[in-house]
Length: 198
Image (cartoon, rainbow, N blue to C red; front, side, top):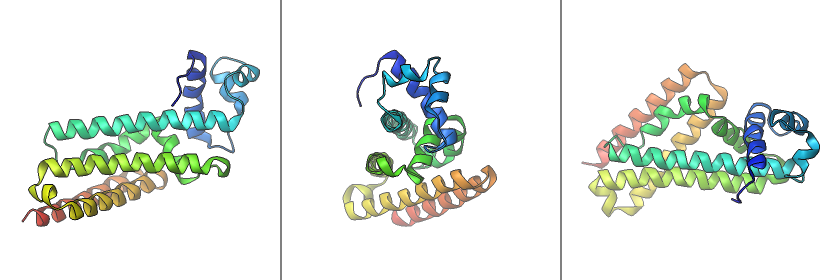
């Protein structure tokens, strides 16, 4: 990701919030420029078109969310939390408070056709970072995870299935439904990990 001037970074920050709220098609470069305290012509001095701004904003949001995930897994590991619990337990709160995550998920599920490869590639890398964080947690916590790489990979993929389903819940369900489903999925995960440890 390239370094941005302070003005371009300010535009991107406002663009993330605007795109998170309105999506690609309903977003307005004029409104984004106004939010950034400039005219639309000044915005074009930093970004050639809507796609260029969208891609840069998406990459910045994705980098922020990836850093959040990496930090969360590191903290959870240091605090000896149950593998993978911290992310689903804090995901709804993060979604409510982070325009970055709302933008990333909205974009991943409904990518603009013109930049779909950029979006899908970036989102897959983000999901892979979540999977790796979970696998590292299992590796540190369970002896079987240090000797059975195939089963470790299986659990990593299953965990991504949980996270993907919870992403859908964030977009389409209410917070109570999300909390109930997250608790149910974590219970099944815990039961399975207990069986694996025997």
